[in-house]
Amino acid sequence: MFTGLVQAVGTIERVERRGAGAHLVVQAAPLDAAGLAVGDSVAVNGCCLTVTAIDGTRFHADLSEETLARTANLDRCGPVNLELSLAVGARIGGHLVSGHVDAAGTVLGITAAADSRELRVRAPRMLAPYLAFKGSLAVDGVSLTINQVQDLEDGCDVTINLIPHTLNVTTLGQLSTGQRVNLEVDSLARYAERIISLMAPSVDGKRT
Image 1 (tube, helix red, strand yellow):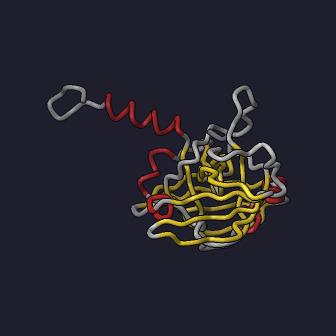
Image 2: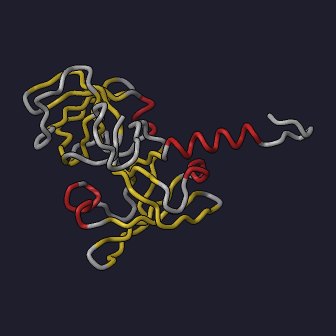
Image 3: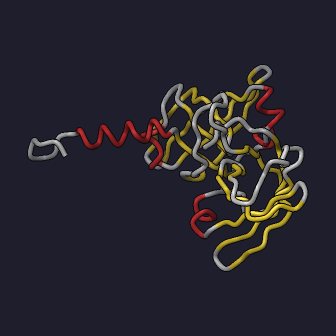
């Protein structure tokens, strides 16, 4: 479990394709990886990966075929947002994030808004029920608040404000139009949708 508060920007240094999956070598510095151990979880651009080996300030992790199909940009070298798993009793400054990416979205545009930037992302239509005004959304592992939502036939557009701190300490300051990003919806929204769907009357008047 994570909070969506990025602790460092690391780098995917090497990607080795292994069958339908892949093996990553990630430079974790400047993240304090001294306490990492094999088997620990690290969120890499919002995707929970298991540490399989440690080499100094680097850690290794494997990606399954399912992970590669559902995420974006983990199959190439470059900067990534890193967050260690949440310790029991620690402060939750963002929102609870599982690190299980729901889908990849697409950056529609980035515009200046005083010292901040306004980010517009198109999410797949299947995520629309979980996206709401002032709700939470993790974008590449960063906990963000949705300012606007627009439902479309083929997707759902969300507008998010990125403050200077977020731009400076995460990879979101390097986003460009057309880039794909990892999205994870708020788990509370998922449970709410599930409860409502089970409470809805069926066609014969009985609840499902």
